[in-house]
Image 1 (cartoon, one colour):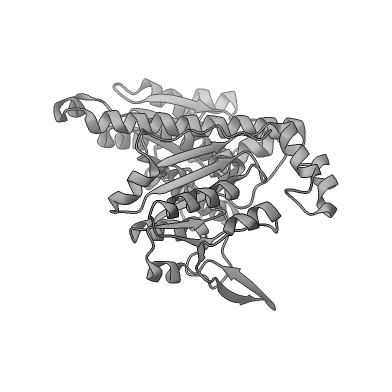
Image 2 (cartoon, helix red, strand yellow):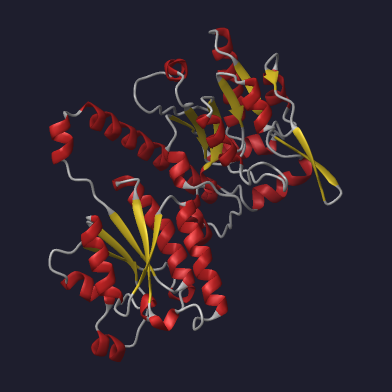
Length: 399
């Protein structure tokens, strides 16, 4: 039997949040995989809100031709989709401008990680959702846990799965309520066999590849952890709001600095890991890159420069404030920045340097640790040394 393990942030109901009507409120259903019942439950909740007098519309819901899900649409008002021509094919997307013009209290917006067709107002559906929230429209949405950006490396290393469509963790962190629809691996595989998830011609392939017991169990655990973390963040926010001003002033908030190296693969891994750690401590965190003279634009390898730009964009999408410094001494520049911004934790990636190099120059990590009154230092190693090749210049020499 499918069962819902419900976790909601705080004690305030979503109905009460909606009626506050300032900036829109976000409710998010998180599942371990397709077929856990996220869309079905969203539609059920929409009918319940409508019966309670809330103005609800369907901004975009993807039923995947599942009979039970389509039946749940019932009499709900559906905002017509916009149609876009792309490479000879007509694609349908949510008409976000039409939803704004309709100005409902609540809009259902499925598949948060979806990439919109070229020509859409925004490139990603989560950007559409943020726009609706800014317009004062509350949103109920859904996402599978594998689409969280910070889990990209985890999924690739543990499941061998590369996820192309992702949602920044800071977007999920903005949710006012999070609900996990928990279902056992065997129950989910049974739903797949019964044709309740994919078309018959895709069932056997899915069972043999993505929908294995091991994969589904791993994803289920990740989903449960994510929702538990969301509840913890919500409780901390409630405590913070209820604290007296003097107590808030005394309480120390950790500030995190992620030191971006010129090693592209290691930096990507470091950023995703950092976003999850930083998000637990303080949603405001820094991604700092020190450009040495050897890495000036006219001297750095073109391919390396392109990957560096991509990692800076990744850091921004994960919610970091990106800071580019210039200097001949990486450790000195990092320590000075940490002092100026009150950074309490520095995260660095571990790369491989020769013993002679470390003896002659001293590693950046050692020098960060030796800095009097400096931040704590967390050294992150890649899951597989073959995934990280030492970059050029001091910015890549964390160890």
